[in-house]
Length: 193
Image (cartoon, rainbow, N blue to C red):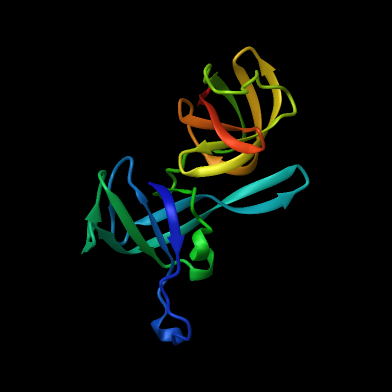
């Protein structure tokens, strides 16, 4: 499932006994999810190491499911679903986990800090020139949005370094936005190679 929103449903001043875990909202793209399932959420929580940023997925239990504004015991592809978890609500507050991917335990796609992307720029976009090494762009990978820097290029294959880790697989489509006339504009798309 690609996470579009994450939030805390607890009211301010709720007693400790009444607090429920954080909620993740999004669209299931493959498989089904059931109450009681053990899930992983990635990329998770960043940790600084000597070699850079390492992302640690979060593990949680599914406590409730809501689909089509009704509580259900199971949800599959088609439509949006809200997944109630046993996560600390502070992790999900204010869309902190928006852009994440939710999977059954052990099933997350690879967490990437960089990727080679086969790029396709729109030819008729006003002011669009070829990409250049060192340029900063914004990439949409699923529901994740991350600034990225162009490290190197070889024809249409561009090596991007992401500022935020993303969960993605080879062949996933991404949207590429560039700064044009002082605004971020959709300039093309790409496929993770």
